[in-house]
Length: 374
Ligand SMILES: Nc1ncnc2c1ncn2[C@@H]1O[C@H](COP(=O)(O)OP(=O)(O)OP(=O)(O)O)[C@@H](O)[C@H]1O
Ligand SMILES: [Mg+2]
Picture (cartoon, rainbow, N blue to C red):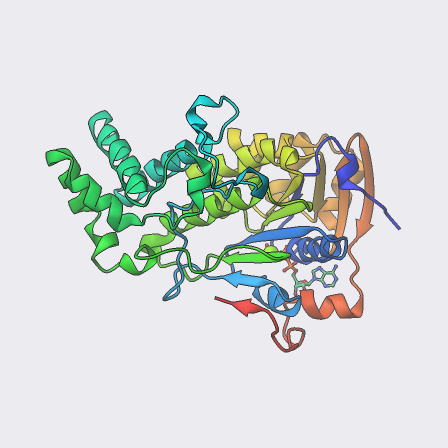
């Protein structure tokens, strides 16, 4: 029996590395289930549609962005803590240095990033200035200001930004024209209304599989931003775990890698933990952001490694000859846990009930679905 309390480490983050088929997702799902038993909340970023059955079986919510009628509005603002809301008292939040204008500014910055992705190029200084004013005009049009008490109002949508841009001369109009596919054209369905399903409850799985190729980068960004808002939500009190399986899909993308890095650094302060699972050792060990994610995880789990990856893993984790042989020959589910100067070998074992929820091989996913899928 190995008992490991990740919450007792410097941070509760964990990185799981292993070759394809080594048992990473099995172990990740088992860790997820066991944390749910302990009353934690969790969010999964699921590029391969592997956690949908699990979510259904434990009464979680699956959000499939890219499906008809499923939207995450990029203009959504973090919700202020209830005790800050007092509609009868008029305070100028700008005058309060501890006030909440960060939420609005932060969201405006995110919309800038999203526009850069939608337009497939970063904005010039002149365009950025026009976008800035237009974003604030769109929020103002919806009655939303830097006062957090206004953030509960329905947020504007991309069409409102496009309309505001058209009020800003040639520069604004040309950006609005280029946004047309997302406002009135073939991709509008993902942007033409408020958020349809809010992440909430004990488990939310964001399945990215259904995102069409042309919207994959933008859709992933929307999901990541929604996860960021969930984590930083001040009304949340329980521990929150974020699981990113097949993390190489994010690590290879600039925005995705930066998101993982920022989350790895900051999630501890939000009473949370990040678990990053990937088969691609190169993306973790040979990129600055990948290494930073690894260095910000106090717990590392190494499963069986491919011969190509073994040398790099042995160097990075200063493996002994014995540990190296163990990882070269490890059977499915056998792993080396490395953290805080301790190492221990173990094998992942689920109960028969847990196996039914976890196992992805034929014959093991047969329970009736009870959760909500959107
Ligand atoms: N500890 C274990 N006990 C029993 N079965 C396991 C165990 N670990 C993995 N399996 C089974 O082995 C198969 C591969 O495992 P899993 O999907 O977890 O691998 P993976 O490392 O995530 O692979 P990939 O990189 O392709 O995602 C699955 O069918 C899984 O149910
Ligand atoms: Mg897997």
